[in-house]
Image 1 (cartoon, rainbow, N blue to C red):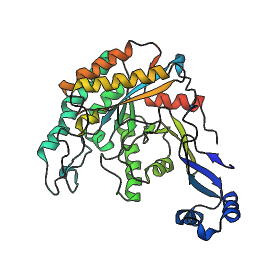
Image 2: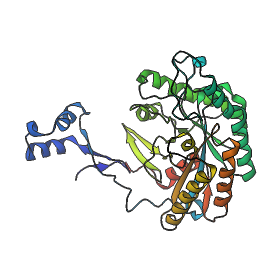
Image 3: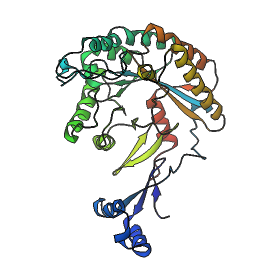
Image 4: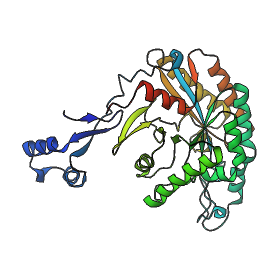
Length: 348
């Protein structure tokens, strides 16, 4: 089939003349399904996109060629969100309702949710420091997904992270759901996030992760430019390239399963033992596969969640378990991105 598969994506990019010829030769346009007819009229001249199976993953994933011949690249993400969440105090219409000890909490319109505010405050007052001390003891680096408003409110925390050698990546300007945020507002938030994090940390963020994205997020991030990777994906165990408009964008997928957020989910972790067991099983599977095709494992953490004393010990047990294995590259996500760009540059 003439065309180019987007690396490990579900889209084929096909020349419009070829596609129009197929349409004309095989079926009159009037009998094509409505979505196909509309694609011919709304896509840019010369290009048409067709839904298709994943292209470059599956039976033959690329050889990662991690440093030192590692079987597994293992990286930990600490989400720093406390201070950027929904709150009447932040000028929002309702209180926060997501990812807290109050499972299935509902937003309270027009009034403060004092308990929710206090639960988030725990992450900034206690949890973050407990986690930073643990990773310092274990000598393992972190990637910080920093919400810019939270960083602006707690600059001393960001400075401590930088001094410890952790990567500061952007987690957006606010810790809110961007699904229904207007495009112009989201574009401005991306600009502000990059600017604030550079001011607070002293270094430009090179990674991006919104989390609760809109349909516009990936395009707006690519248009802004300056990011070596975009992490708003959960669809692979390795990085891959995706063409966003005219911009080749490296995607370094993240995780919502090997993630302490499941302590705040209805069908999630009920104890530290469950968290440890899930991380261990994930590690064992990827480490075993990595003997033939090296893999990547991401672990997601939150200050207000795993920073609680009843959960931190499970995380420590997993760190100790992983460190017992040879051939594991403990790294930051920016190092994965730089490695992939060097070993697997965009192929056009």
